[in-house]
Image (cartoon, rainbow, N blue to C red; front, side, top):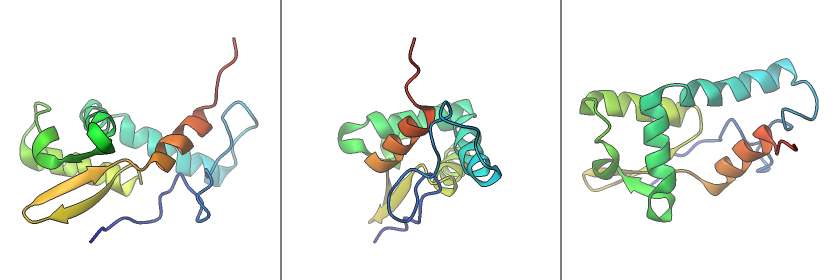
Length: 119
């Protein structure tokens, strides 16, 4: 059973919430949603955890496989919760372990918002 929720970077129809940053200025609501993503990733431990999950085989990782980031287990749990609250990770409990995943649509939305910078 998954406790995934509607992801802030995505509209209910699965489309990215916000236009590329280079397309037009963001509205106030779009800026709030985008800032939540940047705030969640603005911490080095959270960025390492997000990267560990995203780069893990299949885009999913057991907390037991990603918790070696130089902080205590309660701190790891705190940071994983922040990533989930920002809509960047979803999780599922399987027995005694929790598995985290980054949905491909979240990565696509992040890429869409950041846009491609043409030289």
